Length: 293
Image (tube, one colour):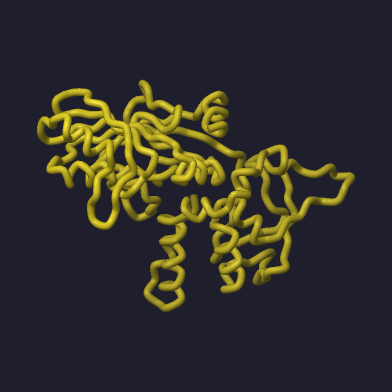
């Protein structure tokens, strides 16, 4: 994964670039969600054309979005603002690129640079799970030693589906499939996430009932959820939404402090016996089930 640390210099141009760097590292997965086309691409649909036929070309902005650099809308802005060069010249909106196959997947025949850094090609879709440890920050921040970014391989380039806060642990899905990410994160699809939680003191059945009905805090009221007692101070909760620090804030509003929070399941994907801090690739069957639901 390329480094954008050179965008931090104090001059005005670098300050503008630093804003883009933050967008790429912190909000990249959110931008991917706005590009359903990414998830629909397959290695077969991007296969190199028969050399006897004309080469396959795509619009530059669309290709940049397919690489995971940014969304198509943001790519258009980068082209407009002069951040993209193609074969040594400034790119424009009518440019196209020619797709070719390489050992690293599908890439462009032309040399594309984003602010002087080579734009990598389109990798085949990858699906992994990580058993995240407490202390790992899910934001992709190159300068943060606790960032998830430093645990991920440079290839394939993977992005988290949602986040677990730094104080939480457990199952984190990693992929470069923007379409699947959108389906799993969008509340309209009602996908479930299962957590096991320990609080700072024993709770009664009223606590379980109030949590299950939905809790109001700040300016939100959470959706109804499933609750199950596991111990005097431990419960299992199944959510279909993913508000920031939702379980912690729900518990706090009812007078309890979460001292341990572990996600054990996303839809039908279970953490099982994967060791903390380790990651593995999903099986073909696991991916099929995720895509089907």
